[in-house]
Image (cartoon, rainbow, N blue to C red):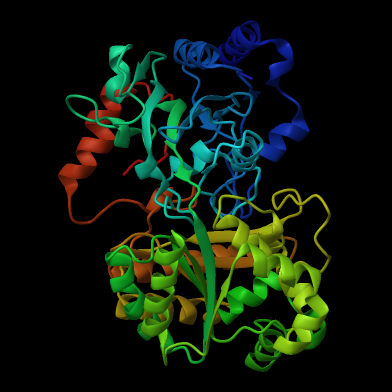
Length: 534
């Protein structure tokens, strides 16, 4: 360690306590490990407990010119986990900032810190009988809400566009100063948690997908529990049906009939949710053959495409929405079914009988169905935590940690207009590349707003197999290159994408973000160097 780093560590220990500055070799190895090959290391991990300690830690970093890299819970699997974007960054772990405060049931909002997980808030809302739901993603219940929101992540409910449901950000700037956005800057404003813009220029967007500040608290808007919710599931035969399905759903999204996000996965993706790679059926060969894929898909009752979403409102509103949805999907899907609390209870009680009637192994399928249903009403689940273990030859352990267990996983999520032809174009490009590199095309689409969809593309492999890290990253690079050439850019970036973000079309934008604004906010490049720098 350099003298300046040793001095900084001493100062951090004085600020947060000796036990909260971690120099353990095993810990440092863990925080630098992701679900793909990484090379950047960290010399220390600091665990502040409140905003004031974060400010002090940042001020110390500036004093000694030591770069820092904040993470919320460090569970950003597939996009970098807790590994820093530059070498020798000290990790500022915000997991101890885990307070839930100021729940306002009338205005349906709550204030949270970056260590608050989606499982923690969901449990809190149910225990307090608030009648409010938090939008959740398909990631682990132990993932940070603020961490995902700052990446503009997408969930399941009508509040799935999560970044549009926040206000009053409390932000520590790269020099250690502290600001509150919106009306929060006035201190006594009554509307600071219900109106995001405040007065004057709005700064909130500067702190999403950037390295211009550390969000230590924000207010999140919650969804009031509706009178009725019905989750719908559909499947369709033929890859060409993707165009018809998306074009049928698009006007329903635009008109507000479909309020939730709708997720549509191909058969590879659905099989990945239920099984590990069938090594015994493939004779150890990869990628999985079409015949094996079809057999596995048949056993769980899925087809070329499977989708889900939910309808919310009064009983009459849901009844009418169901009628419109059925009409829209007629002759486009082979099966459309609906699930309510009561039908879920019946399926839970009689899985064997219903499974025989439906011709599927319902005992195996039911946990996934139940978890999807729960996510539509704000209950996160760890049931999909088995998916990173797809190519592993051992069963997933009871306590799952994809980083620790050398699971290979790289995500890529390009965005397009909500149009079937764009979805098909993205699908064909991605599928061809993945198969060329001998990876299964684990591909889904999320109807993320009334006008946009994103592809959810996973490269899943086993990091313990020699050469797989290199092959997976080569596959990822080709996905980035060819999808970008076709006009499809990602809505978020993992640390594996950060070096490839430079836009070709607007050099003034690059100059403004990476030079002028960064120079004003962080002239010594202390905070997250390399993160979202163009």
